[in-house]
Amino acid sequence: MPFNIFSKRQKKLRGEVPDVYQYDDIPEPLRVQIVHIMNDLQGNPIDSYTCYTQSYTQELYRDIHDILCREYGKFSLINRTYLENIDYIEDVQEFLVQTSDIEQILDVVELFFLFIDGEVIGETQPKITPEEAIEELNARFKEHGVGYQYESGKIIRVDSQIIHNDAVKPALYLLSDSRFQSANEEFLQAHQHYRHKRYKECINYCLKAFESTMKIICDNQGWAYKSTDTAKKIISICFQNNLIPPFLETQFSSLRQNLESGIPTVRNKLGGHGQGSQPLTVPQHFAAYQLHMTASTIVFMVEAENS
Image (tube, rainbow, N blue to C red; front, side, top):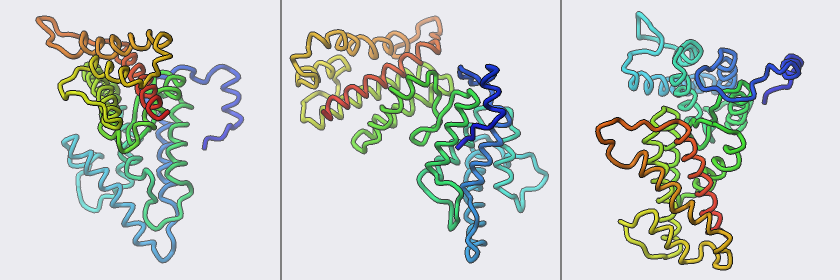
């Protein structure tokens, strides 16, 4: 984990530590720190397995290299005059440090941590565990004021650390239950669209995740609904079946109004219908509001069922 060294403390005292997130630059020191984390996960080969470990690690980086080259329509990540005897570890890490495209940096980070999440790279003695590596990665992002985190196999954009910790992370945790797999995938897709600034698609996937969560709860409880039922209808079914206790009906009337007119209405007005003669632009702050409202509502609904 990051050390609170003297120079960091002095920068904090001088007010030079970022207190808001930015999304348009990943500074070189952060990139180098990410490479250090990647190297720590490779560990020190056990003597009798040295050749095996080196081969296994090269295969891991080769997979990352080949996936990115195919998606980018390139033969190699680093411009080369030859394509034989490539050191894939060196190429991937050099690309991470050198590329000027922030989304490509995040592509490398997401793929690497997805591959190592919960696993040990070969027969090695790593300096840190995958869980510790992910924890340090997220701490480094925060330390540099870069508004991204690795959560549930995806790089997601973070707009507010308080909202992220109190709503988004609990929603991802609750949806990690295998019963909610479809809702989890749709919620992560919403984040993916949000990161790539596809805000209309983000809103659509928020609604999908919200509806899927309610339908799964209805299935779990044996509450009948039609496959064609709208979000408003399914919300009514949840209330009719006392997902929220009747004696709290008055207290939660405002919540019900938000559930009925919040997520579905924002999606319907901004992302769910034809655009007409004028292209419809969804502002970033609308999409952020939608993501956070969806996360909070999912947490409430799932915890209400669990209780």
